[in-house]
Image (cartoon, rainbow, N blue to C red; front, side, top):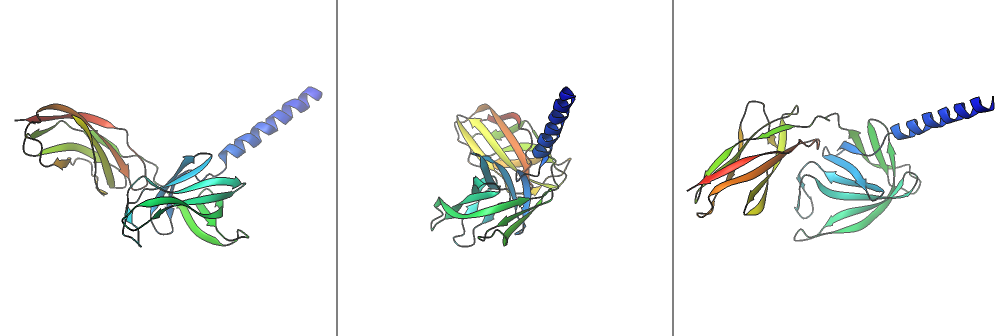
Amino acid sequence: MFRRMLVLTAAVAAVAAAAALAAPSPLGVWKAQNHRVYKWIPYQGGYEERAMTAHVTPKNNCHVHVNEPVYRYTRVSGGHYRVTAKIWHKGCTWDWEYDQTIAITVTPARMTLSCDKEWTKVCFTYTRSADTRAPIVQALVSTGKAGGEASLRYTVKDDSGKTHEELTLYAGAVHHYKTALGPSLAGHVYGYRLEGVPADLTGTFRWCVRSYDAAGNASAESCSTLTITA
């Protein structure tokens, strides 16, 4: 009888642990009440909120890029967090500054941030993004002319129909490029045009591309070659 009680206790503990692991979490992709998409990731025992919708700040017209951190949440106790915000200044310089302490409540489909002293006033809401499928991107063999132009060619498709890309070219130095959110249709070939290729740059170079949809889902990286001829 004593052994059986131990087994039952262990089983109950295992179920409780599994339930705790399955509890809703702020981690993941959310659509905010301002219609922008944000991704919450782990950060120093709390969370970091990253913008997945490029936008401009209303006060100083500063550009917030995709995958750029905008808020950090440090756990205080229970569901309470100290919020640090990226504050933009004139000239688009910025600092991390303390904002406020909030309570975060999460359900499978909704997250609310309560900002008053009694934690009853909801100051911001999010809904869980239903888009969890990553884009598929394929880098293609590309060409260009020294002293002229080159084009980094690729195909990309996503069920949302829109993505943006991050491209990296390894040609002497490492060059990074980003595209704006735009159409991503199967069967279409897209290209990122490089103008003003140096006249003395010839050879075959490696380049890679990664694609992101508006919900923040990232594709696997795909790489190919760029050949520059005289």
